[in-house]
Image (cartoon, rainbow, N blue to C red):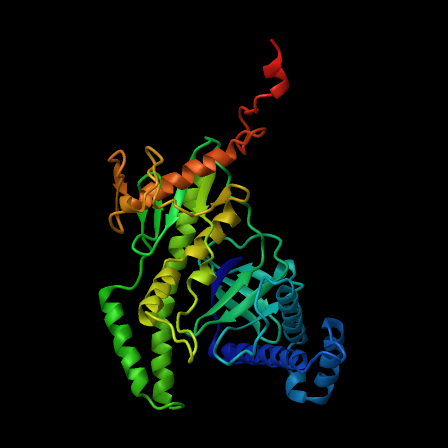
Length: 398
């Protein structure tokens, strides 16, 4: 998607919030319908039946009828897709939506004249029941836009995202492969020796965040002061998230342009960042340390980096089993846990080869991917000489 900063007026913002409220209300009704289902009862209504029920509800409730039917129907469409993802075992079951968290709605059947440019940095998009709303024209809007989504984050910012599948980044065609080892101390170590880190909050921003969190702990629940403090915390954290996303976009684009094959570790991040609290009967150990490690893993943007690489370089990203990649010497292939002397230092106990531990692991990933890329009957993914296995019948001929 191509996301842009929306700049509504105060009057337009009130209508946008009403749209968000209607989409949230319809979504929660659908969640309630499916939560009522139990084995032995009739199946919960599908998208078509829920649309018919929505028409009846709009006829009976004026406040719902004043809203956009497109917004409300697309909320049901989103819920149907969420249930399909749940039954497909790719996502969790759809849950209740709360006000102020994940606000937004989608508009479909967008026409060519619904998006226009006013000046060098200003554009406009037409939103039902709202009219023309300005947004920052930070880059060209892709052609052929058929739908867009308007979102409102916890920091109070509005965005519009046009749903267009971008073209993948073309491969350089050099046949070069690279390994990417992800970590906490070093966000991404490349087999070329480069050490990349996600830019986080500065020292002053961290101190301000800590003060705000302490102030939040003292604020009374439901008070206006607590709301202001939460908004200030959301702005600081949004700044950190924006920097992480910007780093991921730039890093993934750079890797896709420089290398034909990109090798990454096949990590189960959701399992790695699972809480260690345990149960009341069997409480976990090192819970605070594990929580800190989980925050470090999530702040490094491991999953988003690989996701964007797969979007920009489809078919060129290889996921390698991470087992023993940090304990194997890239020079002599000797494997020993003692070779990993510290977080950053690797010294092989067999041949004495020394390197940065993360770079050594990235080189192992690169070599493994290169072995996979040159298959027995394949060759490089982008063409080139094909390697063939020795034919047994030909070897027997004298």
